[in-house]
Structures are given as structure tokens and as C-alpha cells.
Amino acid sequence: MKEFNDLLKIADQLLGPNGCSWDKEQTLFTLQPYLVEEIHELIEAIDTLDSEKISEELGDCFYALVFVAKLAEAQKKFNLPQVFAAVGEKLIRRHPHVFGDVLVSSNDDIVRNWEEIKKTEKSGQERKALFDGIPPTLPALPRAQKMAKKLRKKNGGEGKALTEEQLGEELWALVRAAEWLNLDVESALRRKLAEVQKDNS
Image (tube, rainbow, N blue to C red; front, side, top):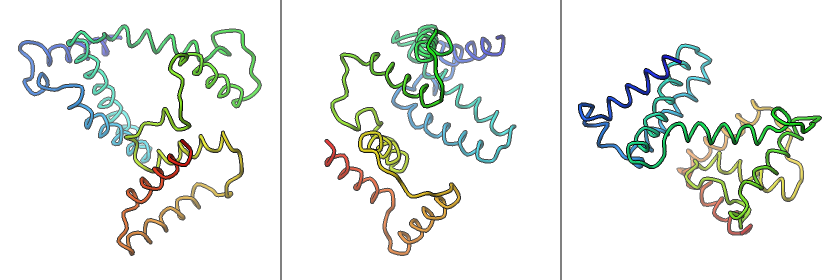
């Protein structure tokens, strides 16, 4: 695709001898905040269902990833063809019902197969604790949901029946109550997650 090749050339020029001094000063670490910011801007755009805004923010996210890859390439860590090849192989391997002869009867089967295939890929890197694999840098709420999912898979049980709208109302009520009491919801949940992690280690 011409547009994609043009974007790669732009990244090469920005990082080249006559490129942008700011770009050339960046490292994989200094780019981390920009990756987080761009993803959140894309999420915000998707919430609005504004196609033009989504397209713009998707472009920003895509370039941020290209920039990270090009920076790593310049540092001889890996290159874009390796990145594309690895993810392509992974997608084919994890979709044997599409690219192979595995039969499935539901999306639950697909998810189960995906998890089993992931386990074989990680052989020799066995996860020792229940919550291994959940990024500790996630904000507390999405991290809590991932931890709750692991606990549900391990222990089973049923939750309270709620619509998404009702859930939003309950969460909003909790946040408002926390504000009245001058409590920091992120810190409170983060500390609770630390307790849950300790109890399940």
C-alpha cells in the first residue's frame, strides 16, 4: 500500500541524519507516555462514534506504533518485517478453526482454544501466580476487572445481574460518595487489589 510505504519513509526521514532533533532524542521509555495518551484519545473518539475523529486518532496511534518500531529498528533491536511476521504467525496459530481443520460450535470454544494455545506458546515461561500476565501499570479499574475474570474462572460463582447503564450508575454513585468523603477512588481500589493479590498468591 503506497500510503503505508509513504508513512514509513516519513518516519525514516524524521529519524535520519537530517531529520527532527526531537524525534532523534526519543527512546522506547520516553515514548511510553505518548502511547498511553494516543490510545486514550482513540478510545474517547470511539465513544463519540465520530468517524472522522476516529480515523484521525487511529492514524495518530498507528504512527506512534510505527515510530516505536522504527526507533527499535534503528537501534538494531528488531525490524518491522519481524514484527509483522510474528503477529501474523500468532494469529494463524491461534485461529485453527479458520486456518486449520479444528471444528468449533461456539465462541466459547474459540476462547477456550485460544487460551490453550497460549499456554503451549508460553511453555517454559509458566505463570506461577494467578494474576501473572496482568500488566501492573494498568489503571486500577481495568486491572480489577481482569483480576476478577481470573478469579471467576478459578472459583466460578455468579455476579449481580446488571445492565451496562445500571453498572455505570452504580460506579458513578460510588465515585460521587468517594468525592464527598474526600477519598481517592484509584488509590482505594489499587490498595484493595494489592490485598486480593496477596490473598491469592
